[in-house]
Image (cartoon, rainbow over all chains, first blue to last red; front, side):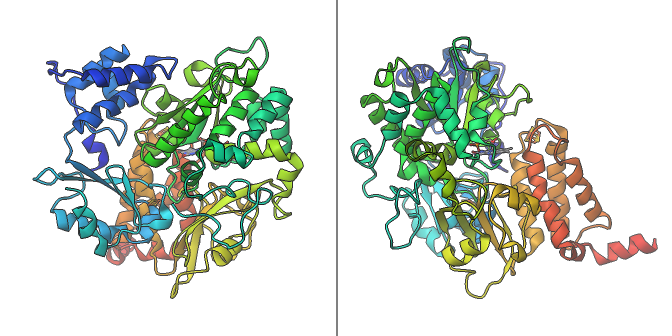
Length: 172
Length: 441
Ligand SMILES: Cc1cc2nc3c(=O)[nH]c(=O)nc-3n(C[C@H](O)[C@H](O)[C@H](O)COP(=O)(O)O)c2cc1C
Ligand code: SF4
Ligand code: FES
């Protein structure tokens, strides 16, 4: 499983029920004003929905298409292209661990093995208690502090095997 | 993030323009920034200079793009249509997608001095008579996102953004666009597609973005570091900027150089452009970590050819590194030690490129996963006779001009140089039995 798999989904023929939260609709409409064309707010809109739900449910694809006045299939095309948009449910916290060269040289593989063992999951999976999803990511732009990972919005550097337990404890 | 230039002496504006105001606690707000010459370049450019003068000054300074390709910034801008017949909508886009493995300089500039980039975006926007600016920021940079937005709000309140800026009649605003991942978004035409809300596949060139870019309008895309130099060039002039290289290189300015990998100290330092790899690694990085020897290094990110220890005395500038078989790229070096198996290192690099291929053209979409498979087999000692030759063919089939964008050629740079310098290690990965069978059978 890779990040890409988490973003893969097919639009079903029956439109699933989904109500865009009024605040989210307002946020998306505000984002549209930043651009010459409403389509440009696609990623902003997907992020707004993901922030509330943790992921982007099928019905949201149609709802976003309506607000942006573009086909749902276009929204889906964008949603499935980018790593940071999740088209499947994820855990309460998402761990993204850098597997690029700087972190490879500083031993991310050991850190990753320790995390997998501690959580009992592989990359691309979510723990049964729904607490963590574990995903790979490319260079996080902090290569001087490898191994680097993010948990939700927090970037953590120099994460060795010995640091894993304490770090994970901070995320309930 | 790490502070830059850990030396004890305070840095000065004259020698370390990009970083002398970095690393303050708390972060400089607009008042504190203004007290340190902040926004003086906006006032000078908008009040004393015509847009064409700004472009000419930057041309004269010979500032070259810090995103990796080294294209002269002023020349790029001069291709944008100007004057009364030019389109009313024109865009300036800052490439803040920093995702080249081994690169961590733009993050520092944006997290520690967001006003410097915003000031630059205003000055360059003025030079182009742009109608709007965007900072295309990678989604993971959440701290930079917040700080840039806070700084933008302050700049609007101060009247540096908005309608009729400083009474010039010019209207302009800047927004931050937070991306959603994928390395290819850093390629400037893919970036434009992404900004328009499309899948980030690159576009065919020509037309170049300067003529038809974002929403079909003239668009300039520049890197964060490139732009951050501009206010200083406005205030201190082209000759001062040229002198910053201190005779180490015909190129101008300082450069954010950095080190990751197996050095004693890792980090980012602002140094004269043309500083050698040896100075960087030994004076700033403190040399190799104890017990390790230097095997090879990437001069500027995953998509640059490996260099050897014997290349450490080369000036790290665009032309010198190019002449010696690699590219300066982003100028942040990755240090690889003698305990590393080069096959594993290259396999890691190619896995990155294979995963990040946008899938638009076949050589890249299919060739990169194949490259990874071959490398994995060789890494396990299970390579087949002929695998090395196939890898060599791939470096040509995925090379410049064979694919739709520079992603695949970039991916081939570390592979081709590893084959050149460390062929023996590849040969050792070819399974002995298989090899004999093929020969005898
Ligand atoms: C695959 C690929 C990824 C790139 N990623 C980046 C990037 O993250 N940041 C960047 O500034 N330039 C990146 N570039 C280079 C840009 O296409 C473009 O040349 C650059 O933003 C121009 O700015 P500059 O002239 O100021 O350097 C990338 C190029 C390619 C082919
Ligand atoms: S070379 Fe690779 S990244 Fe570039 S267009 Fe082709 S498939 Fe996409
Ligand atoms: S390689 Fe891991 S943060 Fe850059």
